[in-house]
Length: 294
Image 1 (cartoon, one colour):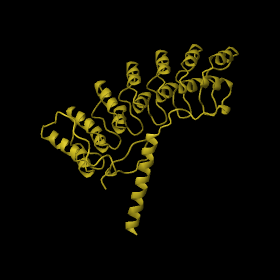
Image 2 (cartoon, one colour):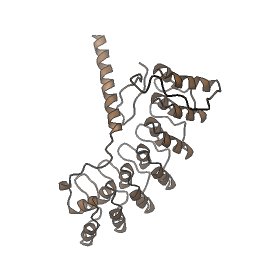
Image 3 (spheres, rainbow, N blue to C red):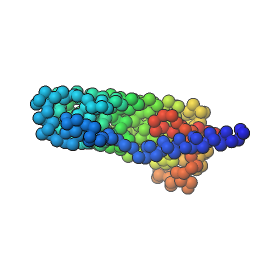
Image 4 (cartoon, rainbow, N blue to C red):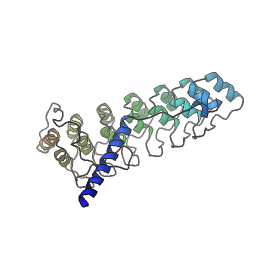
């Protein structure tokens, strides 16, 4: 009976883990919009019909009116990349920091949907880049997820907090590590991100990089002299994760680092691959795998 229960728990853990990976691999950044559910003003904003938007505003239409999902015309225009409509709504003094039903601002939606021109307009007009959504993610978190370094740079120039933490205490840098976005990792390090940040389970960037079998990132972190001996809430270190997951190349990197010997060239990819060798727990958190020794 005990054996069956253990097998069941393992199956549930694996199933949840797989589902979370699928969710991250196929994100849906925009709104699910059925045109029939939008009234004329919001539909025109979403479709980029500047003339109709202007006409309705001239008839005293409230520029910040909401649809059924608490979205403003600015939200919808940003999600669909209608920069001319965004500029028009700004001229009519719309609320730049209005939130939808998920507490996302129009800036967050523009970033999430990779609409850089809309992002530029909003930031120039003073939209707040540090407002959080229901998951406490900021626009910079979403720029990292979209791997948009140019948008991230623009946010940082407008005083976006590079150390903002979401509900799982993931900074944008830790999100980049978790999502294995090496270009963004390098960009954030060059921009001054704290390489010693830890999440709510006290997992370091190095532990996350090891878990995701990211040798170049592991090497980069070691060159930044991160603490390779730190342990998370489960008492695990990056070295132990590398050993238990069978990532011999990463294990050797960490051993070499302890001995003061960092190889000058990136190591070869794992001979075991990024496969089911990874041991993980299920997570109730957004997009964050829990790593635990079984």
